[in-house]
Each structure stands twice: as structure tokens, then as C-alpha cells.
Length: 504
Image 1 (cartoon, one colour):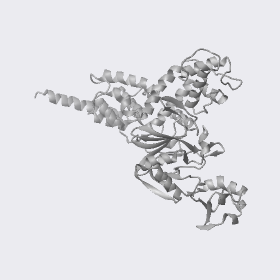
Image 2 (image 1 turned 90 degrees about the vertical axis):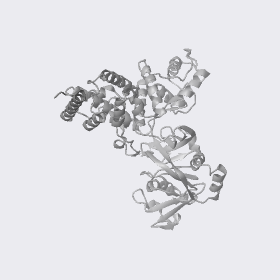
Image 3 (image 1 turned 45 degrees about the vertical axis):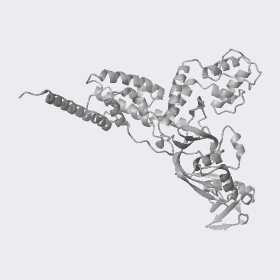
Image 4 (image 1 turned 45 degrees about the horizontal axis):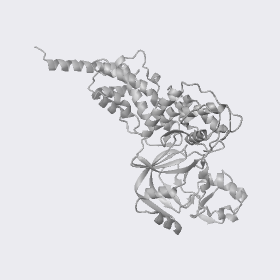
């Protein structure tokens, strides 16, 4: 009986399918993602990707270009080299899947390296996205489909290329014997000016050894980009940042690209706090419409109280809040002050409770109590002295932290604002509250409610996403910004990447 062409095609298709299935089973222990490899081929009807049809050359060439581009995303092509004894077709597919997952989720699981982490994981759509790209012959769109969509991520990608070029230049340490100011002359100012020119802070390089007004403006610009006091002078702290080699900055950018892959920010409406830059951003319609300085958790070696990284939703605002003092703060911060001044609690408006009953703090011998024995509950009444100020922003989270106002505004004048016990103090608390509460509330109505002095909890009509994040390299005003690794989290992440066998 003659075999028709359609039947012959079907037979050949079945043979290819069976051969691929057999090969996947035979190589399953060598594959990093055997189940995902199988699912991908199943989604594309077991069509060969690399070596079996007319598109194989296109896919191979495209993948090589993808690996070259991956460098600018902080992904090292060496991490995707296949085992020598693995089937070549499956090897390329396994590498493609590994690269795609690293691009989409990141190389490191943050919940495994950070104790104070609580963000939602993105839904896994990687294999389905790859299937669609292959079926539509659009493998070159891999980065557009799987990398983070945020403009901040792509800004860092572009800046990584700029820093990569700078890393080939000689970057010798510059030394100064004293602080340099406007009007000073020094041979090192020639090199400082050239360095500021290369970094984009100085518009025109003249090779002068004079500290003129152009150099002063450039120094202030540099200092602002690095979160330093904008003095315009060159002190040792500023020089330390100026001496940071481009390859070190490039690594910092790569680390922050990794952090972007962990989160999926809802830019329609959200509150975002960047911990290392001590800033809050209110986002609406995909753009920042309000910025406020904030104070975050301490980074002192002897008293480490970091603000956690988390994702939640602000569901209510408390006006004239009472402060139910956590035990840790009661014993670490307040008890030493009470021992020095027994009138402290009454002066600051605190009430003391023991077994649910209020007692007079002046009748307690506070010297009998210490950190491991403190049976009291402290509550600070609402009012102008309350440490939470007049406004508190509530959102559920496992760390019992929140955003709040503060009566001590002077600390916002500091460039580095790591003074809290983990919660976040907001300079423009009233402005943020008005944004969240919507058109029903005016500044006059808010001020009137505050003046009444009554504690009032206001549920938001629609909860608003909030993100407490940790970026030490980011875009602001179109400029590349760097900040101190406040809690050492970048160092932890780098070690985790290297431990996992990854390059960066």
C-alpha cells in the first residue's frame, strides 16, 4: 500500500517526538531543568529548536547575541556553559531556560539570604513565554519579555554599558592632605576635575589646578548623586566615593539589577520607600508625584535595628495615634531614660500598665527592672509629644512596622537618616496622607481633625500597595545615584551569588 505524503509527515513527526522524549529521559540527570525542558518541547509540538530545521541557524545566532547582551544585565555568559557530555540540542535548550529564569527571578532567592524579607513572588510564566517566542520566531525579544519592565531597571542596564567602558581606564587613588575648598590650588585638582568630567558631573574639562566655581558646582552634583552633604568641598568622605573604581560601581549596578528581578511594582498607584536613600515616593499613573525624606532603622554595630524589606498594602490611616510601645523599645530605649529621670514617663505622656491595670510610674522602683525582666506595658497618649506624631500609616506585615509622622523634624536635615528602631518616620506625613485618602479630604479637614486631639482610624476606600525596598544604585532626576550599603545587604547578596557558583 502506498504511503501518502501527509501520513509520511505524521510518521516523521512522531519519530522526532519519540526521539526527543527518549533523549530528554536519557539526559534528565544532566539537565538543570528536565521537567521544564520537556514542557517547553511539548508546548512547541516537539519541534527541534537549534539543529533540526531551517530556523536553527537563526536561533543559534540569536542565542549567542543574547548571551553577549546578558553581560549588561549582570548575568555572566560563563554561568550558562553546558556539560560536555550532554546532547547538544537539549544542552542549548537547558541553557536557554536557565538564563531565562535568572533573568526573570534573579540568580538568588532573597528569602533564603535575608531574615527580614517579605515580598510576593512573581507568577511563573517563563516556559510559556519561551514557547510563545519560539513559535513566533521572536527569540531576540527575550529581554523585553522576561526582564523587569520598569524604566529604572533599563536605566541601570544602559548605565552598566557606560561603566563597563570606564572600567578599561586607569583609575589610580587620589590623595589629599587637607580638605580642599573654593579658591584652593592643588596639583590633584587636575585629576579630580578629569574624573568628574568622565563621570558626567563636570561639563567641561580644562586641566586647571584651581578650585573654581565650576569645579565646586561639579562637586556638589557628585555629592548629591552619592547621598553626601552638598558642601562643594572635597573631604575624605567625598574623596572615598570619588576613588571608587568603575568596576566596583559596575558590580554595584549588577547587584541592584538582581534586586529589581525580585519585585514586580504596581506603578499605577503605590508608595515606595528606598531604605538606603532615605526617601519615600508616592507613585500615581506610572510616575512619581510626591517625594518625602524619611528616617529608617539604625545600622549601628552595637544596636542594629534594620528596616525590613517588604510588600504590603496600606489599608488605613490613624490620626492622633496612641503608641503601644514594643517591649524591645521599652527596655532598650525608654527604661534607661526613666532610670536617669523618674519623671520622664509623665513628662512625655506615657501610661504604665501592669497585668492590665494602670499604675503610677512614680511609685515604681525602676532600678529593679532590666531587659530580661520588664513586666510593664507602656502606652503613650496621643498629642504633640507622641513619638508617632499625628499620623500613622497601617499595613499588615510580619515585622509589626509602619510609617508614621514624628514631632522631631530636625533629624530630616541630616544626609544619613538611620535613627529609628525599624519603623519609618515620614517628613511629609500630611501630604502622603492626603494623597492616600483622596478627594474627600483637604488639608483644612485634616488639620481640623488633628486639632480635635481624638484618636481616629480612617479606612482607605481602596488599599494602596507599599514597597519597602533596598536599592543602592538607582535613577533619580535622570542621573545615576549611588548610596551606602547601609545594612551590608549588598555584601550578603554578592557572597550568595558567588557561593551559588555564579559570576557577576
